[in-house]
Length: 113
Image 1 (cartoon, rainbow, N blue to C red):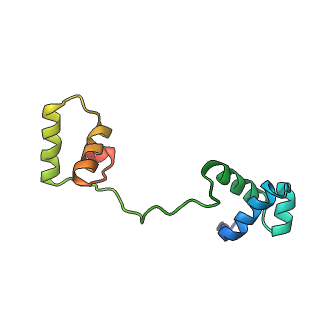
Image 2: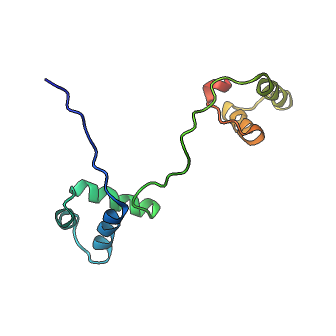
Image 3: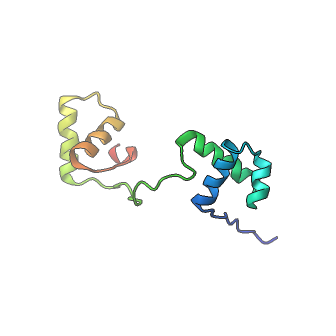
């Protein structure tokens, strides 16, 4: 049997905001909204949930994807050794946080380990 590739439909923010308006202002049911806007009822439900949680119909784009560093430079390793000399009880996430604050380097916990 051939695998079917799932394709998720993209809806405009205007359309999704109209669904929110219909639900909260016009007091339409999710089934009625789905039928009127020709979208699935599940899309309407997810949109309303997103609106309740963050006050938007779509997640905001915060920044372009930037992968975390996988290898630390000699300078960063010396920095870690220095902060561990002063405070040997630091957790990995605290070390990673200090690298972010002091050097602007976003690293994963396995990289620090």
